[in-house]
Image (cartoon, rainbow, N blue to C red):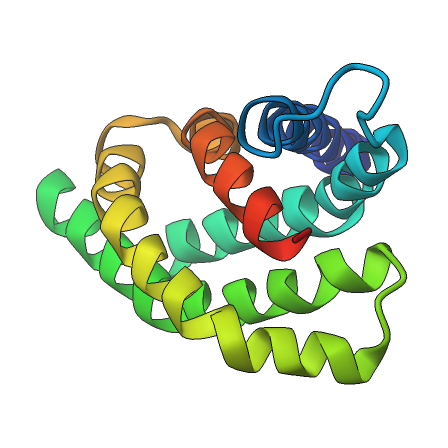
Length: 168
């Protein structure tokens, strides 16, 4: 039960930040008025956070914590976690998000496939402009229990970008 609560807490936190990111994206990047705001899109983006992003990040961070030797210096542990995160986790996670967000909006699979072909690499390149430094700080200085939350503060900016790209 305690474990379920932890997953739920992270899922809810992630959902809230993703909803905020989508809302910001719609108002400031898409230039929508309050009447034009697509609350359903915001809710769907948040649901992806609740059921996929939050639980996945929680599990991944715990996996990294258990696999990177604690005998490493704190700096080496942080660098190792960041490198593993950005090489093994970021590409498939980015692919999953590139699929799930349009799917949650009802896009047909063939259009999603084309969108991935058109935008996946540029999303991944932009990922590497933000996340390695952010994750280095996360893995080096943030206690495990707060790593998902920290990542979501950084993700507020990232989610605005993702929402803009994946919902266009």
